[in-house]
Image (tube, rainbow, N blue to C red; front, side, top):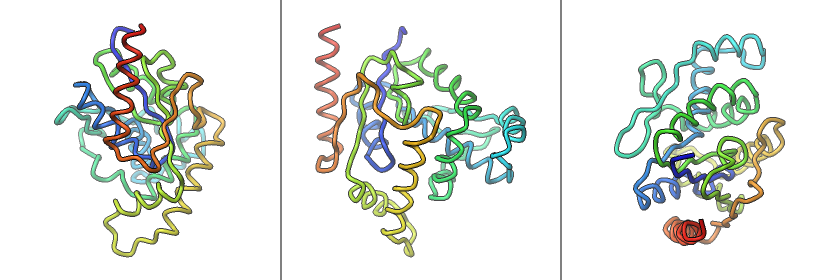
Length: 223
């Protein structure tokens, strides 16, 4: 692989998005939120009322799907058939649907080419759940970012604009998503054998990034 690829996997709410974005800026490369792709699939499933649990229906739906990224301010914006859907994919119901349908091998296969095409053309930090295990097993550096469930739920709760939000519900939904991601048959959430695990429960995003930069620099010297 001619480009430098760094992967950051981990459960929801661990801080992957913030850390990945900061790290890519420090390294001067592109940040790719692969979870957005799965949310994009979920968004279109919801919009089109697709019976995605029916394999034949799902196959036909995926053939018509036109998801791709465009670059804006050193980050990718998710497009679907020419429309920017990035503002609509961050709701809790889309997150749960994305977690559920991402277990389908057809969905993962359909999105694999998009991710690998980006990696062939540019240095990038890829954020997701199976970047280091499945998508980029040869990545230069792999990280697995974790944090306590209560800490992750509080972070997600603080990000939510809804005044009627309920932190207990947020934690329950996050625990359900963890369970879905860890126990799915296809590409379950787990660290790659050579991934470096970082517990961000009591670290700021800047502290996590500084630790990662030290590891990346050290790895570069040993290659």
